[in-house]
Image (cartoon, rainbow, N blue to C red):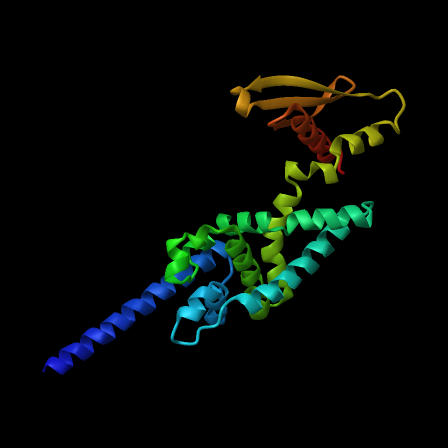
Length: 248
C-alpha cells in the first residue's frame, strides 16, 4: 500500500514539472512571437553551458546555436542595411552593422523579451545573477535566432531579427549614420528660393534630463515636428518627419 502511494506521488510530481516547463516555453514563445514545432530547440537555446555541465542528463548547451545564430544575424542585418543605405560606403556599413549586433544591443533585445527569466543556469550562475549578465543574455538572443532558423527557416528568423533591428536602426543613437537634416537640406536646395529653418518650441525637464521640441519649416510652413534629449536630436527627428511627409 505504501509503495502504491509513493508511485502516485511521483507521477504527480513529474506532471507538475512538465506543466511548469510547458508554461515557460509557452511564455517565451509568446514573448518572441513564434511557436516552435520542435520545442527542444528553444529549450536548448535557453540552456547555458553551466547548466549543461552541472546536469546529469547530458543536456546540450546553447553554444552551438549561438554560433549559428551569429551568422544568421550577420547576413540578415547586412542585407537590410545594404538595401536601406544605398549611398553608404563599406566602412560606414561595417560600423553600422557592428553597432546593431554588438553585445550591448543584443543584451537590450534579450531584456525586452525577458529572456533572463527563462534561462537555465547552474546554481552558481543563478546565485551570481548570471541571468542579468550582458554576455549571457546576448549569447542567448543569438541562440534563439538559430533555434527559429532551424525550426522555421530563414524567413521566420529574418522576421524575428528585423522586429528588433529596425527600431534600433532608426534610433536617434544612430543619427551619425543617417543625417536627416543634411538629406532634407540637399532636397530643398534643388528648388531655388525655398529655405529650411528650425524653431525651438519647447524646452522642459531638469538639467540632467532635458527634453526639447522643435518644428522645421519650409519657408513659412511647418513640415515636421520632433523631440529629443538635445536640440540637435530634436531637429534630426523633425527633419525625419518632414522627409516622410515629402515621400522620402
